[in-house]
Length: 331
Length: 257
Image (cartoon, rainbow over all chains, first blue to last red; front, side, top):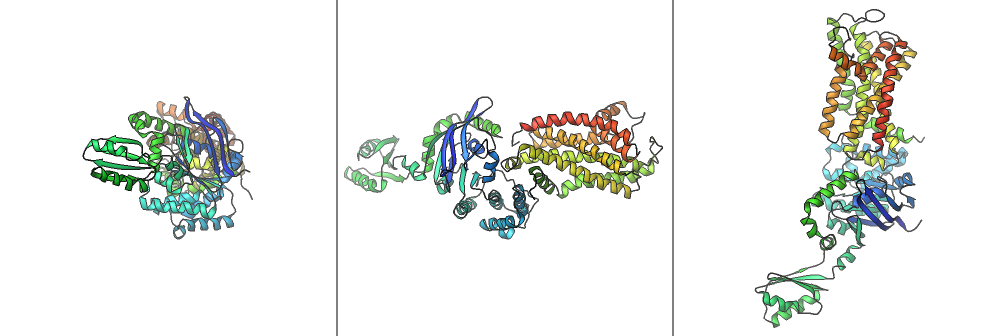
């Protein structure tokens, strides 16, 4: 087997009505990676995940998971993967351990080893004390943690997490991130993550894939994606617009200054070294700033730049309809 | 020992349906029908005419309640698909080590197991309430076949609803109304006589539950197993049609509702 646990070549999915959800994806994901899929609603990320987890069949193209073809060897793929869906699928009328044992029986795992595994998994997400409690007594965060380990009972090599922290409060979300990192570090599982939360992708993913309109827009580490924005932004507000024009030429390193009213946005390579130069320039030229701030590149900016939020908002209704249609078709 | 995939799913289906609500629906309600209606009407209806002479009302009622187990269990089986689709479990199962056909067989087998188990309990309760039932090895086998076919029919019917109906309210409303009509517009509780209203009689004639009850009654109350073959053939033919349709629709069903 190659070093990649997931490889796809020109993977496509077209739904009835000639709706092209995924338009030819090429991916290579390494063993032990946390790989994040980011994209707006209806971008094609969930369809991609569903194809890779054998839930739906691709229209064309090719993909292997753990060396097995997702179409021809789908049962082998399924034995090597775990899927944690957005929905809460645990049975409320069963205890946590009973839910986990049920999954163990799905895979025909022997009682002894699977019970030991279940104890370990409960301990991994700090649910050992409530393993014998009914799921209906669990909080939302506890149920999410249980869902997380439900996908690990069969000791998968690849774990698909679909919006693992959707609807959780900030504290619980942060805790979930710790658990996900722990799963990777302690179990060596490759994790494929889809999320709407940019900070989640930033925090967890070794590499991030931004997908939109069924195409991969970019793939890279968080740092690489941020670096693609070509530097930091210095924002200066002055009393008059004339001063802004002077400021725009303070250094040759400034790229594409944008003046908006009494505010100027200067893109510079490194604000830490350029800011003192700008201050010095303004003092020498008698320019008094009303406000000054520095904006470091964020994944939000990368995302908006690549997926074109402005255009999406203008055609908000059609984008929303498209997202709803995609969701309906995926099901 | 490695269990076949569909058996593992059946075990799961049994486990998740052992909740008090389902048990009450499957066993409690028919037991109440048998005990309360049986005892209450026994005082009003002293006997019901039969091919071998009059029988007691409780002896008449017991096969009706047993036949209804096919409807109840079929509803539980078919309803599982709807619930599993609604709560995301269907998709979870299909990304596990199962084929679609395993899931289908799992719910069909669950329904038959529930139907046979429920019928056995109802028969025992009927004995306890002084019903006179003809329990012979041949009758048991024939009744099992009747129940298995009848349950497969109702599982197929509810499976079709589970595939086609999108909203929980619509699904619940349709199944509750259907349950009421199928149960009460059937010969389960009362004999069909010349005094039965024509419209009701027409509905009873097209009600598949009627044929299951006729067959069960021929076997258990009248000890006329050969007479049961006629209604059994009717329900078999209907079952084949509905099973075929259900399998076809199920093959293309989306994982979510």
